Every structure is written in C-alpha cells, then in structure tokens.
Length: 343
Image 1 (tube, one colour):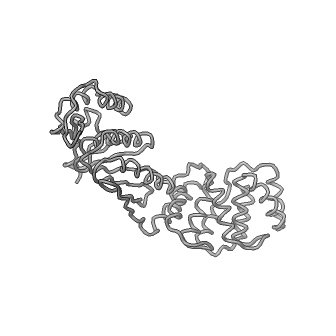
Image 2 (cartoon, helix red, strand yellow; image 1 turned 120 degrees about the vertical axis):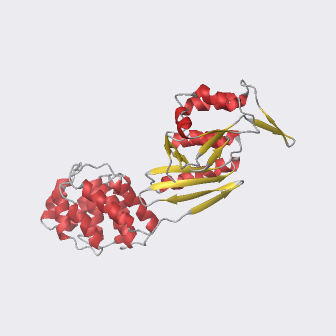
C-alpha cells in the first residue's frame, strides 16, 4: 500500500493544490491490504493504470479503505479511467466514513475549495474536523491532522441557527475548533424537550468534538427538566451557566458530564416542586411524593455524592422562594465540577 500511495503522490497532477499536500504525505501508511491488493500495486508500478484501477475498484467495493482511497485518487486525476471528480468525492466519502484519515482530509479539501464538487463549507468543516480528531497513528498522522486543523480554521465562520419553541428558543453554533454550543433561553417546556432532540441531531451530523449546553432559564416543567437532564448525561454533553439557572433548569445543569459555573454571577437555584390546578399553584412538601421520588432517582443517576444534601435543600425551600448555590458550595454539593471567576 505504501508503494502504491507513493507512486500516486508522484504521478498525480491534481488541480487542487491542497490535495497535492495530502498525496505527498501518503507514504508508509499502515492499512490492511486485503487479498489481491499487491497485484494492483504491481500493475500500477508498471504504469498499467486501467488494470490497477480495476483491481482496486473490486476491493473498494468489498469495503477495503486503502483501495477506496486509491480509486478516489485515480478518478480525481483520470489515471486509468476517465476523470470524474464527483465519483472521486464519493469514494473519498466511503473511505472517510470508515475512519480513513487521508480520505477525510481529501474530502474536506474538495468541499472547502469546490475542487470538482460544489463548495460546501459546513460539510468541509465536518470532515476536516473529523480528520483533526482521527486517532490514526501512522508516521504522517500528526502532520496530516495539523494540516486539517489549519485548513479548517481558514473556512468562513460557522453560521448561528435559532430554533424557537413554545416558551423560548435554542441557539446553535459551532466553533472553529470543532466544539458546538447550544444555548437554551427561556422556559423549560414539553416543546423544549421535543425540539432539543432535533438540535442535538444537527450537532451529531456535524461531527462536533464536544457539545456544551449554555443554560439561561428560570425553569419550568419538572418532568421536562428531568428528561433534558437525562439527555445531557446520555449524550455526554457538558453544561455551563454564566448567570442564573433555576428550578428545573438546575436539574438540566446537573445532567452535564462536566458542569461549569462561569463568571461571578453564575449560580444555580433550587426549590420545592409545585403543582398547578385551576391556575392555583401549591408547593409539594411530601418527601415521599411521586415528584420527589423521580428527583431522587435522577440525582442518584447523575451524582455519586451529596444526594441527601441536595434533596434536603430542595424539599426545605418553599416553591415561592429560591435557594441559590454558587462557588465553593456548588463544588462541595457536587452541583458544579468547575467554578471560574473569569468574566
């Protein structure tokens, strides 16, 4: 495989200058060749490109990443086959989806530069971002990841998207280093819980390296706060507060795998559960009620310490008041995993 890629790097005259960088790095890359791969290498060495292409195409169709990369590169240049950038991109994508670092980088470059395919900065950012985080350990892996990172940072800034829901909105943005931020602003409602799933799916499709959820809410529905808190933990999201996050918002915050209070105004508020009947709101003080059984179950799920202390804080604070925790107290209670005083 190394010999084939080296020959490809010397022979191809690709229009996109950045792709030459990729091909020049493609030496001594450790791939499983698969039966018949070396036969393609032999044909390629003898400049019998159609024969090499035929062999590698057959292997690529069986799922061989190395062959798929060579097929893509030959299609891109038109070696042994009619030049076809669209098909080249399709084969790069197949290899990229299987975790091939070189293919991820090549596809990202094509999409970033519109080299034979329509320019798509968002998709380019996705593939270049995946390349920067690829765990490959080949001799050129570090350099290739650095190349992907530098190229990704030259892309236009990612767009910010807003998704409104009944009671508030989500604001979604992706940072240049592959992190995604989702801001929840407004009440915690059933509609918020439903719409949040779609926002997180968008982050997954972009291949976000990490996702932070910025919480800016005074709370709302207990049921949906618990549901969103569980989703934070299951999805591995990190939560952050820079001002106030109260009531059911505090439960969402507790779901983060990392929980950061950022800035001197950041604090989390807790109080008793409440019920509303005919527009009359009343506090729930019975520790054995369904609401508190669900809260306790959630706290046991997300926290390995201070569950009783948190339960006491919640139950002992009237629903028309608020107990705020911040700083060292938040750390001691296990509410936050990090407190930053930076503004």
